[in-house]
Image (cartoon, rainbow, N blue to C red; front, side):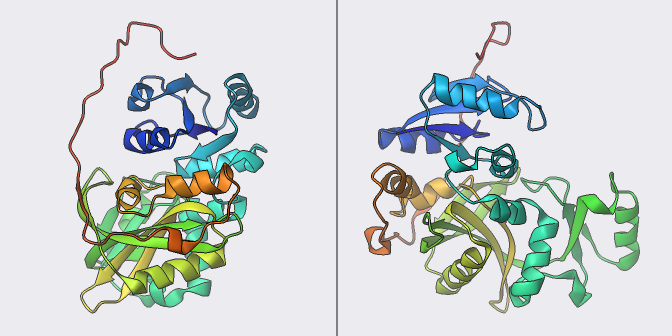
Length: 310
């Protein structure tokens, strides 16, 4: 089996897991000097809006005999379907990817189907969070404590109201739930983990915990959206124990490697479904709770005066 990682420039630990399963991988990145290049061949690609994006990706798939595409960014999960390559994608379909990749669409979906577990601004509470509609990694998020402050931020937000959303601010503990849905959209299982420490939107310290309520919500919401493949749900649980689903990433999360190491190996699930063409039984994967992950920083070096990439 061979896979082209799309937008996975820093996912070196994930790449190692695929290699351990004897899955051949390449990378497709707009920047060739990425840490992923230490684990596999990385091909310098085109931007999301380039008119030749589809033909360029197909060229790489055919030239290097790569069968599948694995999007590792929200934009990639959407774009690969939009340019007609959805039949090669491991993961969510176009509609599900759009709901998860567009915070406004996700807000509409949650307020209609799961209002009780979404931090809706319709409750008229403060403080609130203002965040980019297509943002990622906790970038450009603002907390406002009054209506006047909210108006000031909204009036000065670059691009206007089409580029941000507003949610109630929930004070509590942040959880991530890594989940896998099979090719038919069936729920295979999920592993909750606390986000103990986060840097630049990426989890640094995390520990797996048994949280049946979060698994229940994850199954119900994921099946309603129609998710497939590896996914990553972000929750906040307040002081009263009420869980709120903040967002979903229809792809591997940055810390999903912890759940894989805790016995819920989504790479093996991909191999089982896409290589062996064998249905997945939830009983095949029993997670370990109480497994702690602590990340350290690793340096990668590149000669920027030397020509890189294809």
